[in-house]
Image (cartoon, rainbow, N blue to C red):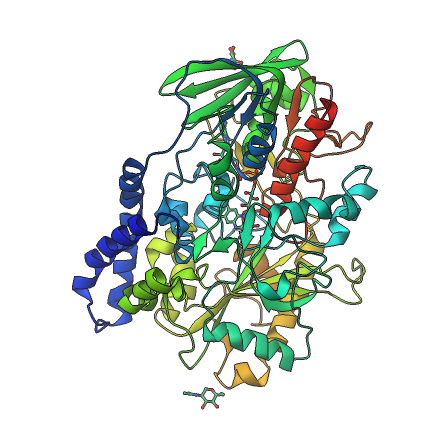
Length: 626
Ligand SMILES: Cc1cc2nc3c(=O)[nH]c(=O)nc-3n(C[C@H](O)[C@H](O)[C@H](O)COP(=O)(O)OP(=O)(O)OC[C@H]3O[C@@H](n4cnc5c(N)ncnc54)[C@H](O)[C@@H]3O)c2cc1C
Ligand SMILES: *[C@@H]1O[C@H](CO)[C@@H](O)[C@H](O)[C@H]1NC(C)=O
Ligand SMILES: *[C@@H]1O[C@H](CO)[C@@H](O)[C@H](O)[C@H]1NC(C)=O
């Protein structure tokens, strides 16, 4: 395993710090939880120590001119960096605002914990009225990665590439070159499928940059989910990334030998060994340097000073769907009225920041009358799990926080339904949820919601399921508060502002309830928590109106920010970039990241973002005679 020794040492220190209080799990669950909160306080310290212990290759030269300057070393930016530096005559500068990835971040079980560290931009949404209402001030936490590897360093590692129809639909919108037939070769190029049963599939790639395995752990609740789904007569799928997405199946993850496999592992570790890649971390890109309508370079902040970097060929923004639009708007490329209000001279009017999409989920809690899966403290405090992880690369530490099963559901008969194109995803967390105020704080859950919904299930066997519409109609917006680049971009996510999205999730919930009613779940007394969601007391529990109320209140976006520099054909007034990812009306400037998605895919976003980076690099090479 990569850096295994260092992780081992650190984890043992961590366990040592925790265990004197609870060597043999004698302490009741209620007292354990604060210890886990304590662990969240340890993680940032371990990260800092590991950063000091591990040497990373990065550029410290004063060089200012390159062929290409890329802003953001996330999924797409990392793929671009590796592919562009395949041309030895091209020097590429990769500017990343965050710091390095360290081994502790690669232990799958710790997902979610890194949202409270400096590997996250710590954005929150603006106050919402149609989702997030039960969060503190009705504002959801809105994590997005701030590190080498971008969001792939803190994400939950699920490999869900979307449906072929997603890409065909992009092409139907006029985006030539983005049909599934065009994209499948890229998906295969990215993938290194390590699950033996899936290696011979025509849909899957083998030998690519990003490794995919099943976690070497499977909690009993995950098995129950699969069994009960079958009993309830719903379809199963052996590979939701293959021929048939619809159904329930086992989660595939971007992991290898029990560790996270990020953009850093898959792309940058190789790219940064090349002499023509210049990677500068802790480098925050503020604005573009524009000469008329030509992008010449960027202004960025590093070590408290402002620097410039020039691109003789192109500047590429891969800063993600929140930050790429912010850089554009700060540079005078955006909605004219909005920029004028902020005193930013308009260079090119474009609908930057519009079309913000996310997957906004209803959260549900189901209690069981029998302990089927462990809780987070049970896993952390059992020394055998550590031994298993380091000696055999297996056991619960390889589980991405207990998310091991997933459902793609088609709402047959719905007006908006297309056969073969699932409408709803259900994601299950097969661990007893950790009811602590510390964790609730990470998600900004309000005290009234915590007291009503989580406190009563503390230490009890239960299952959390999140349900969302895969292709929502709701649209939000990214905008600026002022022309100061240090003010965070504003995120008005507006999940569930379209009633059709509410209806779709309600249908998904009803399907989930049928699964809960199946014999396997009934044997363990599965029941959705009926403590009314605060604010929904006026409705009869389990009526459609009750759930519509809950959907607006107990819901959160699940970090699939996309669409804010929409790709579209020439003449499309909603487009910010063309199908070759060039910013409309500007020369020498592309956007390549989740921002360009015209419609969010029916999956999770890391794979399409890798593909966007790979494809951008090919487009650039083709235009430059290669
Ligand atoms: C908590 C979380 C969980 C997720 N779980 C999953 C999952 O399980 N499966 C999945 O497929 N997807 C998941 N995603 C989504 C997926 O990881 C992202 O959609 C994907 O990584 C986006 O790729 P990107 O290239 O658009 O941007 P990112 O990967 O976010 O990279 C953008 C990079 O740009 C840097 N940057 C931003 N602004 C600047 C600036 N001004 N100057 C310099 N650098 C800058 C950022 O620090 C970051 O490193 C998750 C995301 C999050 C946040
Ligand atoms: C920011 O806006 C103010 C007016 O609100 C203006 O005086 C200032 O020049 C602007 N600065 C930049 C960098 O655009
Ligand atoms: C759990 O609930 C089921 C169904 O209500 C019941 O048959 C079973 O006896 C219960 N088990 C326990 C341990 O209470």
